[in-house]
Length: 385
Ligand SMILES: *Cc1c(COP(=O)(O)O)cnc(C)c1O
Image (cartoon, rainbow, N blue to C red; front, side, top):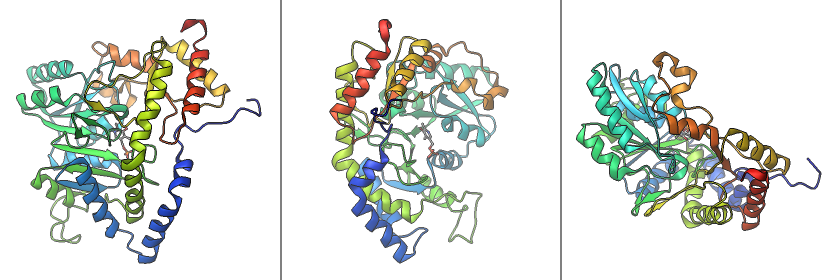
């Protein structure tokens, strides 16, 4: 790489910290002085703010987004002989927690334009699984991939018609909305992650569970602290040790304010700059009418694997990072080899895994940064754009 090439960040957390530094340092130092590291005041305050923001009755914070999903599985008592429907194109956690609960993930192909679970294919999979008879269909995990809510207007009635619980995995969806309704409010239980690179990230691991169901909320609060009854030393069920620590909560309170007041609007501006420059030349992400994305990723689709590798290499030479989310369909992951799921029926996920490319995206990108990335993408297409 020539010396004059300036390296760009994929998600610039250093710049975000430099903007929020005074407030974050103050919040952290307050927790250190109070020494209330576990279940301190900031945790309850944050839970209240998060529940208010997404309009859920309850927010139960926890240690990470994977535990958030597991807590939901435990609260619902999912286990052996249960089928849980999950998109084939998502991060591993979505299906890992199903297997961890002892239930069986049933993979469903996605819509190529929105990257989210295809409602028609979901219903076909439910009917087929029920007819086969080996497993009982129990729940759907819909994922809000790359910041865009799944199609709940279609998914919710399908889940209800077949008597399935609906879990919204909004690890990437926090801040997105559909018809004015916020992500994390669409599931019977909804979850998110505060992993640093997610739309709302902390400075370590963190997660949260949301629900309007008072009974489920009570169970979730027990499950996250060793299945506690009256207190931590009265254990009425088998649970987890899965809390959000006070330091992360204090940091998240500062970050949530910035997210609501500025960052969510900024990432939407950045996405607009990208789509203006790249639309018509490559497949840019589609945000259906009535939806707002929180842009966990800005993901384009290229003509094929060879073109993608060429574009990535060209970007890298210009000091621009890019990432492939995801290279492998879940049904092909070695961890699920025992399920022996054939490729048939997963054509779209397979094609996406060969063609998607995620570009730098964060609220502190300028229009110039976007022009630099977009220009490099278009050059990288060569004669094949
Ligand atoms: C990141 C992510 C998770 C897991 O969150 P962690 O906090 O990393 O455990 C789950 N589902 C999806 C779709 C994710 O992107």
